[in-house]
Image (cartoon, rainbow, N blue to C red; front, side, top):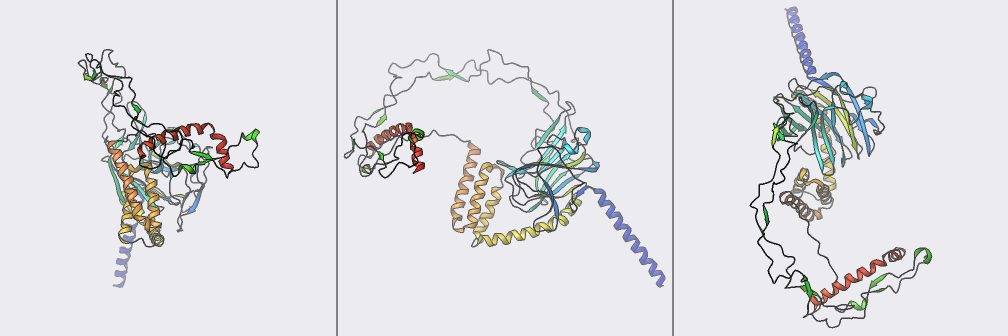
Length: 538
């Protein structure tokens, strides 16, 4: 009886082992490529020998972890490194997942942290000369600089008619996380032409690769194009309105009348000092001991405001202010009428597009290598756990085992640091700032994003500034929003011509003071150079 039970348990154990083996074999078949950087990259990854790529790659630990990665170690450098795959990977066979981790340990103000999935070397490249010219199939990952803040997805697709490889960019891509934590980026390519972009396992973008709404330019070209040889007829009139040929200028229309005339009713304010200049030489200024007239020019004392002018309406020669001329009409123009010969805006006729083709599914070029070719102003960019798999579940399991534990540790550390630095920043105040940080990740802010982030950092460090910072941020966002909707118009600056003291005759004295101030500015311009040196020396 005991022998029978022993044999039964032995059979169960063998079946269990066989099941585990088959399961592991099945899982490994779904992994087309995986790089953990647990071991040094030397001898496995090839650093480009091109002179421009002088950034030094290092095998280094992620800050706060024992886990290693591929590190960008220097600022303001170009980097290029490539890894050939043992087996070429086809993207045309079912679902394919591209995934990797990157940690921006020093942030990312201007630079890239993306990967390039390269075509076979028969396409015209060699690893030791890997560069931005090396032909790739997909480029994927974060990129930020100035107004650019996005997770790239670029597909290079061959037009079967022209034979040309064209870059097709994902429209409205998600933005890059603005912290310094480890994030995992995932692109899922599905047989139904669906593209999913995930950040930390959370879907951020869903697109159709064959949709002109999602890709720019669209993979399927337009069926027709404007005829490049079509020319606009010489008699084609595009003017919707024209000057009325029957209109005549009124007899009383004076084109020569000035826009402004002197205000004859104005009177000089009482107390105006005609003989006093607005500025005088500084009586306390002395010529520098090292001043050499032959080299530095004739020394002039710097100017200061005339103290005698402080308690009076104004100084200098008084002249009547100008006012709008009621007789001014300006140049006369004939009124516009509907153009009887108007034919509309001319467009060339459409002809069949010789490069048009139909497509049911993208014809992806195979992947033979993975490369990192970037230019960045920041160091501390750490790449890790690069994966190509044919099963989303496999990619998810790698996220949970390789990325999630690190992220959780970093997140807890970040929370502790924020709590320590925030001081009294609690409750509703903290919630508002968290919300504004999310708003700051919206791409439409463009160049204003850095201003918003600066204000948020100040508000966190100094809780008493929170209200003012929030108001400033709301004004910035509202201004950008209005510009996006209505467009910006540049106002003409109003030329200020001077100043005067506020008295009973303020309006008159102001205008006169403006004229005299402008005159003074023009006169002072000629003596600007020596005077500037004088101010610097004193």
